[in-house]
Structures are given as structure tokens and as C-alpha cells.
Amino acid sequence: MSRVGRLPIAIPEGVEVEGAERQVTVAGPKGTLTRALPRGIAIETGDGQVVVKRASDAREHRALHGLTRTLIANMVEGVSRGFSRTLELYGVGYRAIQAADKVTLQLGFSHPVEVQPPEGIRISLESFTPTLENQYLSSRITVEGIDKEQVGQFAAKIRAARKPEPYKGKGLRYLGERVRRKPGKTAKAAGTK
Image (cartoon, rainbow, N blue to C red; front, side, top):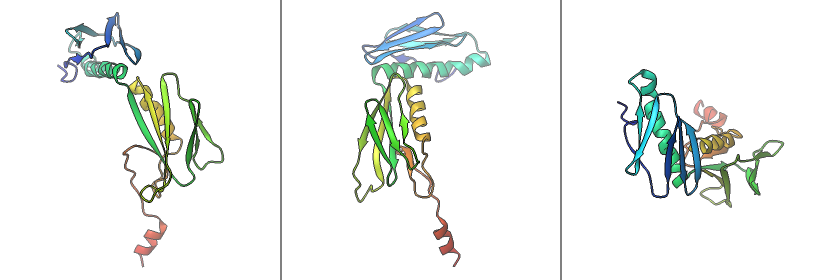
């Protein structure tokens, strides 16, 4: 049996989990999420926890057992606490401006890049003035929502607008992401003398 799939999911106070025919609905203080269950996978609720069951030991059912358990656990966490992903904007002249619910990014292109969040996603912006320690950090963009998949996908879409380049590290990166730097032409020329 799957080591992940057989673990029960604790239901926090204020969260309701309902399993209808091939569908699970999780409602909590932050919202409601619904997901279709794969064929051969069922859930049982009781005693303040959810247990995911599979129909057989077929390879397909074994593969979906742990995945379904993790997806339902993410739904429970999302409606109770929510998820967030933070991006940092590095670069001289790079900046972000928030107007209503959309963010306009100046990323060194000839045009601004506008980012409009989908329904269920919120964006907040924190701007910085350059200091000696962080002279290139200009903004932090935080993406928040209750659906972990949607939050991660939208954060990746924002990052794709200008990925960090390897020479100076300019661009959008996740908070705590380490960008591997390459030496430039001058470092290469200095080493050959």
C-alpha cells in the first residue's frame, strides 16, 4: 500500500469535506474547492479525518492513491490557511507598479508587461529603496490564493516574463532562489594572461 496514500488527512476546525460520486468538495473559512476523483479512488470521512481508499492494487490505482491524498491535503490546507509565493525583482531600472488588481512591470523591454491575476488569486506589491546590501532589489511581488496549483502556475507565469540571467542576476526570481552566476568575458580574459 502507498505510504503517502494511507496516511489520514486531519480536518481542522471550520473545514468541511464532502465526498460525492467521484468528486470531493472542501469548504473552509477562505473559500471552497472542488476536484474530480480518479476512477477507482474513493474517500471516507469520519472522526475529524479523511482517508483515501483505492479499489485494487492495479498499477494505475497505486499511482493515483498517493497523488489523490496529497491533492486533497492541499485543498484542506488551502481553504484553512491559503498558499502564497513570493517573487523578487532585481535589476537597475526594473520596477513594478500596482494599479487596482493588476501589476505593470518595467523589465527592460521597449514595452511594459501587464500581469492580470485570474479569479481567486490576489497580488500584493512591496517596493524597496536601494541600500548598500541590496542595491538591485526593487520590488517583492506576493501571489496568494487557496488553490496551490493556481498560485504556483501564476507565479511561474510572472517569473517567465524575465527569468534571472546568469551574468548579473537581473530579472524575476523566487524568494530564496539561488541564481548560478557565470563569469563574464573580462573574467575569462583575465585568467588567460
